[in-house]
Image (tube, rainbow, N blue to C red; front, side):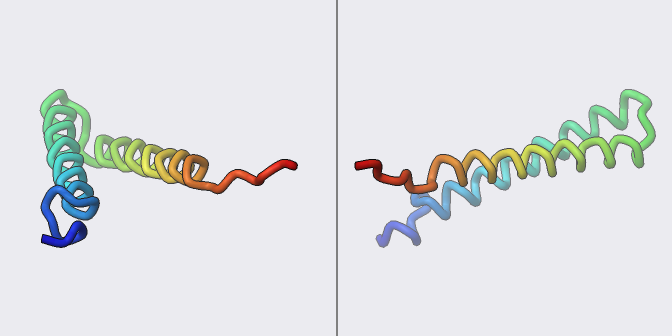
Amino acid sequence: MPLFSSPMGPMGLLQGTLMYVGSLLTYVFDKVQNSGVPPLIGGIVLSFVAVVTGMFSVLILAIITTPKSKVD
């Protein structure tokens, strides 16, 4: 089976991670909603945290994958 079609390849692992994060956010939202926080406020806060975390992840990935310049 080719690497990119494999469930354990990079795309399969990315899909699994996204599904896990989505279910985790749903669980956290339910807990926040059951604690008495209005759903709108809980959704806004969780969305803000998700966007900041995503931006931070992209920034770290860009820093890690940027080729280093060779100094002679």
